[in-house]
Image 1 (tube, rainbow, N blue to C red):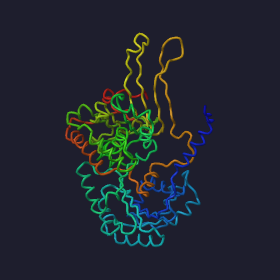
Image 2 (cartoon, helix red, strand yellow; image 1 turned 90 degrees about the horizontal axis):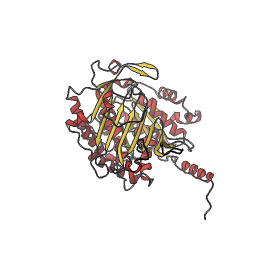
Image 3 (cartoon, rainbow, N blue to C red; image 1 turned 180 degrees about the vertical axis):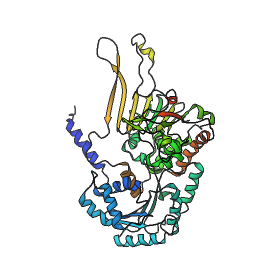
Length: 510
């Protein structure tokens, strides 16, 4: 009989495996050009992520981070501003900053102006630092200037890949409906090929979101029961406790369906429901996602009444502090009908999922910040325990915690100790970061790294964007053209409007 290795052998092998998961240092030189360099996204997310990658020795030595904006800043002012954004972070290193600071440059540029001076300045920086013509253009700007910037880059030759590569990164939203998404795509493709366009959804870069595919397809215990024969429902929750904040102007014209459902919620849905790709490659993975979007049961007008609940937060209390109603937020119309909450029931008409309801729920000013996916399995046959057990037998459930708790919990039934035959629910729990060592890439660090590698696995492809808009358009039209379909008010700090309570399957008690 072979000798069983001691537990510490397993620990050492796990640690070794984790070490091998650290990103390899990039060797290819690059100029990272950030439009909207003086804005909030760059300050809060992009530059801290880039600095963390640089301090972790992931970014190449031949590197330039070039801020582009309309403000009249100098290189020194740009460096000072960026230093203030990272100086207090855990990843801050004075030595790393001293090395990176000379690589930071700033260029003033009107987004609708002449891009020839910008192209000339980039050529000068390229020659100075030996960047070999590789450029990553990141648009941390409002969607209204995506097309002017793309046109300017194209007209000045900066979209061409004659000497090095050129990549164009845009944040959601990708349009506000199908027609505008198609128009945006046509404009971008005037200058950039599909392999050059990176449509970011930072939700996909969260470690626990990526883990969904690993959990499903790298374990034989889950995939055989991941279908309509054993699954009763799938519930996807993305709750936020914050309000609209500084995004009020944008949010009031978009609402929760456009802001969350067209991108984040549909991506989580596809990861839960897709078939295994033949290879873990960008187009193979995205092929399977688009099959799910094509299989969504159309949302006819009558289903807007039966399978959708919309809400808008009223005044309430979050963490003991009073918070205002949505309509009294600064920048929101006083008579706004924009929904801040939505609960949707949808179906996927394919062999795996026919008849299984998927519940998608998202909202602002809810009781807690929480994103999770619950796989609710079917009940066991009661006749087996007839006359033995008096209580109901709770069905098994698998909960994938995305944020803030990154975890996996499996709930099942066991016998309670004692002379009588009694059941008790128990949990097997996995903390995603338990037993790991070393740094974990944050979402924006991961997406930026993939952009530099040219890996589009975690990014939207245009056919997926259009399929999701095609599914949502009838819902949006049905709501916006029906004056009777007004959002239900719910108290800030609750879990949504009362109208959603009977609509949804029982969630765990919170």
